[in-house]
Image 1 (tube, rainbow, N blue to C red):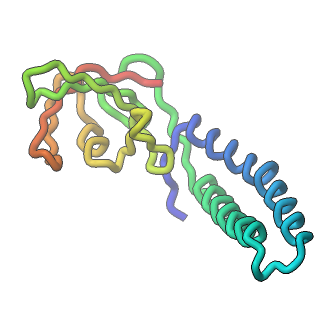
Image 2 (image 1 turned 90 degrees about the vertical axis):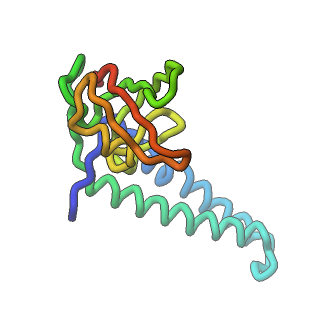
Length: 159
């Protein structure tokens, strides 16, 4: 089985989610199925059908989480400033292809923990892959839907 890089925090969140699915959501779903079954004819029982659909979703999510956790390889990142961008680093970049100061801060994480809305991007994303191995002052260029964009690396730090 191929190992997938993940941060310690990312692995803990996945384990916590798995625990909630197993110990809270699945037992609640079983109760919902029993209650819906008690209402009689299950062939036209919307509550029963919804509970069974949720059961399938929960089982699928539980299996996926177990698979991700079993293939996870925790990568530790040093604290403080770093010389180069590595997995788990937090990188401050400025879009230099425009005249405005447009600073963004991203943490490079594994595919299974990426959350662009919270500034956590996958090392396999176009931006993440372009940043890996670069150092402060380097300029990277990306093709984006709106055209080419250039970014300067301003700061790199560990967790």
